Amino acid sequence: MKSVYMDNNATTALKKEALDAMLPYYTDIYGNASSKFYKIGRDSEQALYQMRVSVAENLGAVNANEIYFTGSGCEADNWAVKGAAFANKSRGNHIITSKIEHHAILNTCEYLEKHGFEVTYLDVDEYGFVSAEAVEKAITDKTILISIMTANNEIGTIEPIKEIADVAKRHKVIFHTDAVQAIGHMPVNVRELGVDMMSVSAHKFHGPKGVGALYIRNGVRIDNLIHGGGQERGKRAATENLAGIAGMAKALEVAVKNLEHSMSHCMRMRDRLIKGIKDNIPYCRLNGPEKDGRICNNVNFSFQYVEGESILMMLDMHGIAASSGSACASGSLDPSHVLMAIGLPHEIAHGSLRLSVCDNITEDDVDYVIEVLPHIIQRLRDMSPLYEGVEK
Ligand SMILES: *Cc1c(COP(=O)(O)O)cnc(C)c1O
Image 1 (cartoon, rainbow, N blue to C red):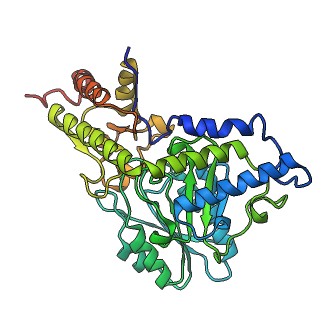
Image 2 (cartoon, rainbow, N blue to C red; image 1 turned 90 degrees about the vertical axis):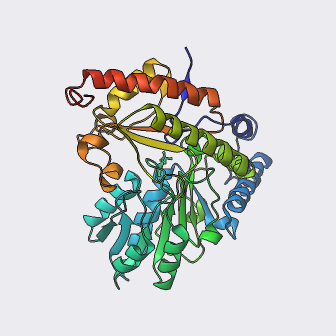
Image 3 (tube, rainbow, N blue to C red; image 1 turned 180 degrees about the horizontal axis):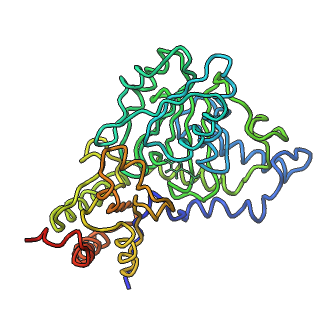
């Protein structure tokens, strides 16, 4: 049976180059980067420094010491929001974010609300765009932090990060962006964007799982995350995951080098999928922007009269891996907070399907999905009491 992985917004396959870059740190170069009295320790320290320089360069940071390695994108998000909130609470207690952020941001903000902070969750428009004007209007003299994601993981909306960064700068508020879905899929440069902090996760751009980074511009006040030794300039103690970091640095280097080619390939696959689905399946709706402002690898549709989980199960039977924004997938009764925020009624949000592509996806893969999916949707609709009578 054919097997097609179209869940690249959930995670990606590790690149061969990244794996090759990791292996020496599991075998030969196993020294602790903090052990400076012998060669194998110094080799690790040197290597770690080079990886930091490489990540900094590929993200546009001025200094390598603005890159802090973390254990995940979630960790980077938690640290940015909690760390900046607590370090700046003498200046105010107000935080601004959006309703469509990743749960790593939303649940962290909820936690902070229990600790005396006030959070404004901004609305988005029907395509998922946050407006810079809305951000500016929400700012009060108590605002200390704004966190808006670069690209949304469910519907692919690319937010106006530069404009929001300008607003934040004008009002002297710290600005963080979760760029986890953007890196490797669009140009991302912290200096050009003008952000103060940015979250990164390796496994979303063909690096290994369990490693990420937080860019913290020099001068931004943020509490330390893990108390212990002096690693990560004392802010995030713990012996460094050298192999993981090596894999992330290499995956990022390759992603940046191939960005143009990779983006144009993904866009072609994305648009072929969108057109194929629209042309072959009635009663469907593309969620997120049509073209402009949509990340190159994301497709998200809602199909009326069907359940997202049922689509996933039947796709799986055909060897296709995808994702849904509907209820059971996330273990709760409510459909995706993102689909709710763009104004979808419950019953339509429940029938949603996310297909996310990458470099390795071919036209054949896309055509296979376009061949299989209409039959799946039709079969499910034939079984649905809601669909009875609709066809006539
Ligand atoms: C995947 C993802 C995260 C979490 O990253 P992990 O490394 O899996 O913890 C955070 N934000 C966004 C937008 C994501 O897509």
